[in-house]
Length: 255
Image (tube, rainbow, N blue to C red; front, side, top):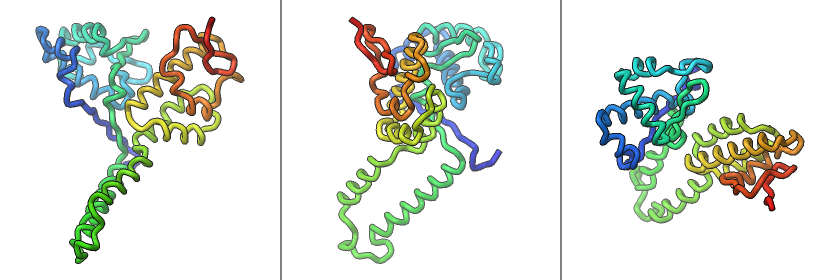
């Protein structure tokens, strides 16, 4: 594999992870700390497969295999899986594949090339900061006030969508049923998806939309082009039970 294309994944835990009600209840059980440690190992193991625990694309991990690769007692594994299901921390698909329900908000990734570029940018920023602080002979009067520099950075940041979210666009675009207007779709996506929470919402919206298409047997010609749906995906985050999909792929009220 090209080293520059190699992707590194990591798990981001919020500082209140262990204050979560479900985690606190589980940790208070007999063997609770073993259950929580096993859960963290599952998060790490599933990170590069979008939350799914699979040996291959067609073969899910069995409890016995999970016990082996996580160095966890098989009894702990069996009991933990049932407990995690009860607390909606994971789901078991029809084929036995385990899916970690909260993984989307926890996973980060970066290619080797991105790491190298980020380090370079950080070095350049440090050099620039040194220049602005007069390290290279500037007098204090030549250095822009700190408030101006902060405001300038804030303005730049508002116009930047993290590279991680740009790469995730390809993941959700791959799942969209009518791939027309990709350039415009990416523009709408970049304008509305600014955080991992936003990405979680747009994923939920797409699931709702595709479910509605399937349930209503919507013809392909009435499915919204990608350029249209990505401009109004917020409409699909929640669907009122008194609404259904109309022939144009949007929502309409039901009397």
